Length: 531
Image 1 (cartoon, rainbow, N blue to C red):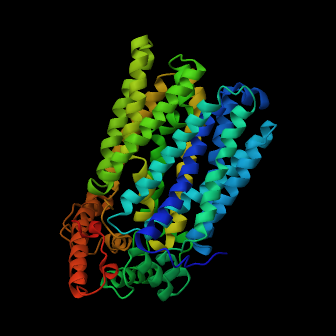
Image 2 (cartoon, rainbow, N blue to C red; image 1 turned 45 degrees about the horizontal axis):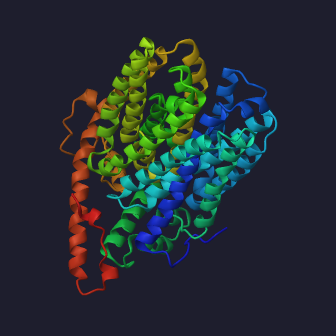
Image 3 (spheres, one colour; image 1 turned 120 degrees about the vertical axis):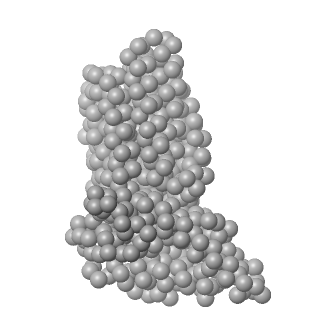
């Protein structure tokens, strides 16, 4: 096992950048593995090697990846607390390498299917722990865009898979599908190589290593400040206090379903729900089956479908950069609601165009596919992966985030399994079903999901602590609102403003107190001082 404290030469922004890069690589391999099957399943050489599977069997082979990911995400719930965030990520990358090698060398369908499960297990580990790892090392004002960086990298992996599939299309041999599948192992090797030099998170070290000093050292290195800095000391004290509140009962599996004075069960259900709802938006109709969609719904040739899919993913990644700016400024809630409604409208328009089935309507249908991916990346990509680690209390954060990721993969499995036969037998009505589900998603978020943008992970605990008895400006809420999350939703907006003001005041006082210190000691991120 590598050192819990990592390499001492990594400090401040360099250390945060290194952790962000390795977490981003985790999502890059996730995106690549989602996109690579889009070209593989329409390759004549793959179809021949797999014994010309039926449409239903192709859906099953593709979806087995998500079955493995569910098990990997659940397994990560055990290892993320015991081994730590860093070593769980290391383990997941090693499993992905094994799965990619077995899958890329497959000569029979059963071997390929087995390898899909193995690769999925590794991805389940990686995607469960990377949002937790990133969230626990990030400053509150920077957490959103840093997770956005991961998800934009995921889209880069998705786009890369499409372009590689298109690039090897002229090779009329098994190389057409074996090379794209084996290529993903490179990203997993990068994760293992870089993770060796990284520390575990201050929160994990303080809670599980039972050593406040080691956690304080890592926290100071992450912030690029002296360990005795008031900012670092306050953040460390907040972590210790949150652990004290949560340690009244151990972080066992049963705590996922108990209130424990911090509404832990409600918060777990919110985490599960938001990730399952992401898949019910219908995104993986496009992600997994864009070339198939262009061929079967719009009647394009195989080569043209692959080429258009490449440009679709290029647009996808470019659109994602807007979220870097909006996620912390606009907030999670508004992005969820507005873009769920946007996806609903786009899917209705897509269904109409496919139903009309004329040359001009086919062109419009392609435009609406691009619009759908834009709405998804603006509201339901990065925001969904950052929300569970933010909303969950520390003692169940690893377990809860892992099961939330499992819920995401379960929803993914359902969508990927039913999409090929749905497009074949009910056609445009498939889009109507997902349009309705997007309306449901928007309503659920409006009713139950509080804003977490701009709040430290520890302050979210205070948002929920004894909420029914706590005196706040909103204690006169109607009983119906108390039975829902609406009271917490309103309270979250008030607390976010208070948190921002406190951070700004503390930063100014700390700078004033150390005005004669060196620039290294005075480095305070401007983002931490913003309201």
